[in-house]
Image (cartoon, rainbow, N blue to C red):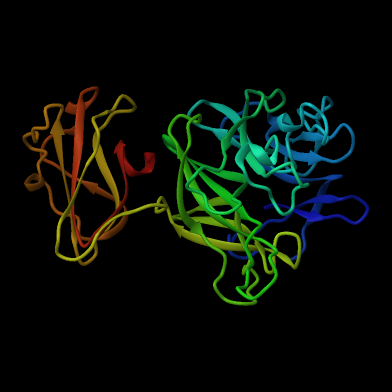
Length: 396
């Protein structure tokens, strides 16, 4: 693990520590990089980068002139070399005509597995309070609010001009701001954990207004268009005095065995006050969202037309909790007719709680390769989280 901490002689330190248990980490770690900045994050690019000297990539905001987003590289995550042409994205001071085009002090780099390139969500300001009709309590009067933009790169050194992605609209309440997003690639979809700031709300109903923060989800299938899901995914604690009573912002994810671990910034009192800690939440793999059918009434889900053009399609896997109920799947052709040998009656109902249950048919699924088809799911007292078409479970 690498985490940011306040430094002694400099503003920030990057600290490295190791553990064989994702829930338990040593209290002390080794400081491996110091910088006069904030909002840092790194990625291990070994699965998709052949440059061993730049395997680990670090992005951070630097307050030393010229201010902006900077990057550094390391072969081992311990010895770091800042990029000679930093900053890679500029910050523009208040009053500069380019003010709204400059980056802020939060950077969330990630590997865009869909477009095979690097990307980063960065914090950016609105042009003014008039642009969205709201003013943040903790932004200079008249300058509005914080937004989140997306930039991309093929080499982690040369970045495109950031374009806005997460901005408030008519469905957002009060003064809604966006504080960046951690991204988890999952096969053909990117899942963003969007950090929401409400600096106009008090953590306690009878307390001072110091701000609250929580995490929602956004998804993308092309790395460009993002759909916000407004339900709170990770909320602050409901318990007065808790270490995460005011804020629960997801900043990092770790896939370990059959669970996903979510490390979040926890604030006990408010945005600019109180104590800050690292919290941990976890959930079973790929169970971010579920389609649920309760009781004896059966629910049906029919997908849009699908065409499988990837690896050989010889199996269908479902991530489902059907304990006490059941899930069945059948396949329909482009004319909405059930395909012989692939009907509800041609396979056993799923009645287990499984992250990867294979649905088996007497008909070979490889006959569907390259052809349009629909999947129809029938659920009774069950929850479907995801499905996958492809090879063996080990290839999922």
